[in-house]
Image (cartoon, rainbow, N blue to C red; front, side):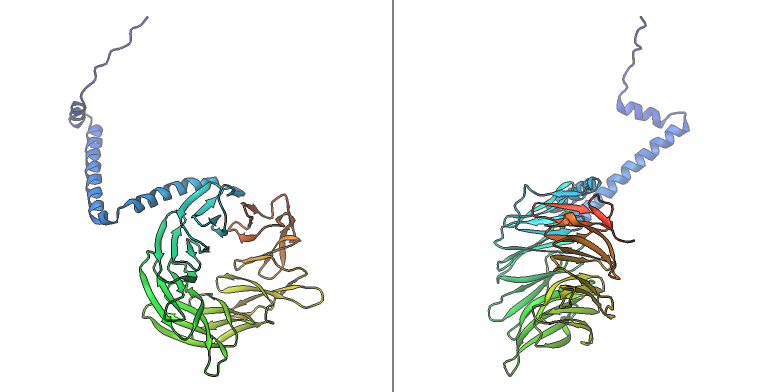
Length: 410
């Protein structure tokens, strides 16, 4: 039986010395490069800690780890999102997942599981979402929290009760509060939680607000009384960089319900009997009118808004219009049922009725339908061409290739 060769372990310092003095030039070069890289790592680490030391805290470490695990979760995409284990007061679509909120917490859930959970402690939670951020606030309460899909960004504790809020694409957000001594007040915060702007008035009730996509402007829809005691709706456009009014637009007796930016220069006001697109000069560039109480639903997209109203034609109960700064689209979609939910992304419209889900293109031509979607509470168009169906305890992804879908493009 051959004997196992014996080896003598050499001290680490001795090994390094022999490599540095090796007759083989390649080993000497590798040793020098290794030493140089090590010194550079130490210097860069020291500079990073010196410069960013005050910023390194538990939250930043948590955010880094959240990014790390989020990258892993992205490989776990699927067709179902299950949140049965969570208490649900509010559920909203968000990216390729959902936001689930109750009185105690808010969770971002994907098909890979719960990605982020943040404590709330709210009596009546409300949720707003943008492409990158989630804003939760306590309606008629005093708290608000902003998160991205990986970490909490900021929190607010207001002195007055919060009536409603708005969330911008940049992460800046606005809170309308019931301010003592005024009818209402509006405060805009940066994504980091610093107060950027505040405005209160004793003359108007602020109903809704919106922040422009680039974060430079604020639109506020309100109503008040004229000198002859008549109700008047009013739109205020404000420049957040200098806190000045850009324009003040009378909406006459049209009471605003919501306001939003279509782009950085155009605002849409949804009212009780008309939806209007208004430019920075205060001019109404397009308008859709309807009878009071006939507005069913609306959905924003970049540069346009889809509006669904009741139809009184013989064969239709609902009419859907596309409105933008170009005017009201000539293509009108009429369907024989009332809409339960609607989503519009600029190129597709998804409508949920008692018969199921139907997806149309922007020319109002049907693309595909899915009758198994009956019972869904909300719908959200996905980037891959499919649709997320939001139920009380789960979400399901369907597309034209699903077994339960029917292609209508023929």
